[in-house]
Length: 238
Image (cartoon, rainbow, N blue to C red; front, side, top):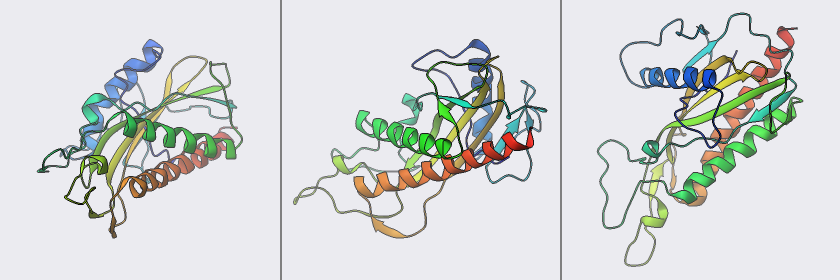
């Protein structure tokens, strides 16, 4: 099992079933332990999910005996980017003038578009089709960004005497994502996981184009591994 993502669902454009909302929200409170606190994640969650060892994600939980073979369709819900996550300033960051690390609607929309594009492309590759309402063969996928740390202020907020500031950095920054997988027939969460993307330590131009390309690579990598893991799990459950 190599899911690279899980979820802390505090809100959604469309309300999730109560059991999915509660399970994901509670899991969200424990996600922060995965990214810096001393205590390791517990071996079992209160909702019955058990931690999966030896995976390439930071943390993965799955319901024992979960049957993935029945899923043929995906209800992919929009990527959630909470207000508190949109301040993407790294620790100790300083700004000058109008510089800002706070993601606006433009940046949020770009993240959502790249996530949606990557997930649909990769899940389609392994044979899933997409639906807008659940059925007995539907797997619900809901994702949320749980942390962003930009390497430099947003390009549109940088200014010098000659225009936009020229900035070099080692990648665009880091991003942590989480995902919950639920059975469409019961709304029961059957898997959760979380991971963080670290850019390559190569110095280069930090601008909107370069940063969006890095976001695209991160989502494509995550989506590819999610799709491959679901495909393997679907076969092994048969």
